[in-house]
Length: 115
Length: 115
Image (cartoon, rainbow over all chains, first blue to last red; front, side, top):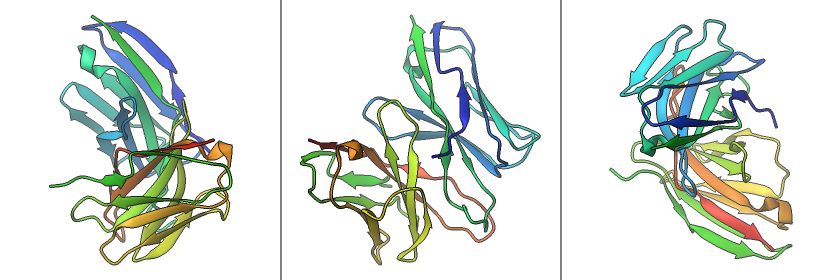
């Protein structure tokens, strides 16, 4: 099935460093969501973005909805060991469209933080 | 406030058997979506239920079917299991808005192993 192009696939960083990851699509989305998943668990919603150009923060996390509506970015500042996990982007199309309610996911970015 | 719950947490089935997975949405939510997540991949949308009807469907065969009950809980049924059906099955709940897209919150998942 269709998936978003998420990069990088994995990152190995030192505690305290900043992290950036992004997600691109050939299709326009009206909502971008960022999730974190720990092994054996379900994805946990981190940030939701609703407007093109929107910049939203949640603690040390900041995400942006790209102007073209085809991309989104997630930054984590001053990483800590508990940031370890898999980060997924997900796009949701326009309400009322034929795919309304269907989330399309990226393949994930595996983040490892060394103390 | 209880989040999304799923049962069972894991199960093992044999090829050709049938399985039923269950989901209770987050309080206040009326929409349930099901996703399949293979190892190392992002979740793939199976289908979505609102008002006890299937509203959207992903690229999954008819062996995958579902149901939503009046209390908004949902079941996912898979018939004639194949080895390739082994995956983490995730349930996500949300509120169905006519003009606004809302976030989907995931449960912990059911790990299905087909032998």
